[in-house]
Amino acid sequence: MIQRPPVKVLICLVITVLALVMIQNLTISNMHFSDYTNQLATNVSFSDSSLSNIIKTAIKTPMAAISRNILNRYSEYRQIQRVADFKELYDPRFCVVELDVDRKTKTFTAGTELIARIHLYNGNNKSLTQGGDFLNIWLKNADGSSSVAGYVVDNMNGTYTGHVMAFWAGNVSVKVSVTNTKEGIGLFTNYVHVYGSYKFINATFVENKKSEMTQCAPKTSGWLNKTYGGFCNLTHENYNISLFCGKPKSVPCEKWVKYGWDDSLYYDDITRKILRYKDVLLEQIHLTIVPSSKGDLDYPAPSTHCNVLPRALTWNSTVPSGFLYRGAYHNLICQPTVNRSKEKYLACLKDRPVISIGDSTTRQWFFRLASFLNIKDSAHISAHAWQKFARAYNTTSGLDTEWQPHELPFHGSPGSDRKTVKSVAHRLDKIPGNSSAIVIIHWYAHIARCCDHVDLRDHVQHAKAAVVKLLTRSPDVQVFIKGPHLITYFNANKPYAYIGMFVEQVLLEEFNDLLHKVIYLDQWDMSVAAENVNIHPNPLLDDISLNNLINFACKAS
Image: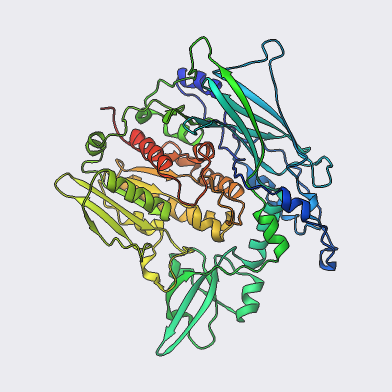
């Protein structure tokens, strides 16, 4: 199990030339401030006879909260197939969160670690006896200009230990939330297993005047087979990445011409309530941090410049990897040398194409960067057909940036031409030899709508083979993998913390022998600290992430 060290340990390692590849990512995180107290109070036991065959939770695998080993628990989560009573879940009305206080001084000093003891109780006010829920802890000042995420360790017995650094002095709040319940994760994993996908995409088949639309998933399933009486195996048409669609009755499978999203879901209201029961604030403890001997701000500032940091360390950084203080981002992995200035960005990106491949969050980066650099010339940019290739360029300044969607399952607008969506590997293979491009690759939001870790691995393996070929013919290309971010949108009935964790684990495992060549852009803990809500992060997070990318990609100026 690979673990991330606490911040102080990492600094020692960096000072001694950044030794081992250490820990992993924030595994348990999230937040949202929806008040479920009334919902819990009014939910009663479900007496439906179909739920009489209950499989109880069985989370037995220990997991440090700052490790990427969530898939060790996959079979255990799969055992959670039914929930008989909503009151079996934790209830924030009864849960207890307490901070450890120095008995002598009874104060908290800037630069020290705060430790929270967390005890979960269910709706019957009985202590939970198993782990498996995902918790998050973070520190924030009143106006939100200063914030930092921590991590939570699962003690496997219904208690948890939260760790968060107090880097600055002032009045702050320590916040603790349950981001995903083990029951929600269990129901989600079983749903994907039964149906082959969480949400489907659809395929339109056309021949002469006949047209049929069927649902598609990244794997076969008995449900899909029974619904349509057979499959169309479109894997070959999807660049050899698995895709299976219901067989149309009157049109051949080879007449597939269009695709689009499908928001159909086939679970009951009980499952919906449990999947929506996430990102609940357990406690908000107000306290005052006093200055240390170093003053109001006390944190271990790194001395190694980001552009010379060993790339493997970007995959194995600390929690936190950075924090906000009075609106300014402080990087804890490496020392930035390129501030967010148009002139420095222009100098860095001159004659270096920026190629983003992914979903609408990478398209958001594309727009943000083009706008910041004031690139006026553009091609193929449409708000209506957003899933199409887009490019912005300025030949005079030597600037060229583009965005391309990744392969299906991709949940584009209904009726989209399937030929507009190509695989990451196909996109990478089109980059010529001796290129100096900056390439950004991202899977997350569309994976969350459909896939489990097995399906994601299929995507990543195909892309990784293309990355190897690209770096062989163009060793000056810099490849970045954009990691997942926190999503707490109330109506997004998916366990995003769990999904983010398996995305990170699959990425780490598949790129394990390329960690020294590929740079990982960790967004998770900063999105936790900023209390991000939506699929599309707020502009501050985009600016922080893009600046981190520039600092890794560019020499000090």
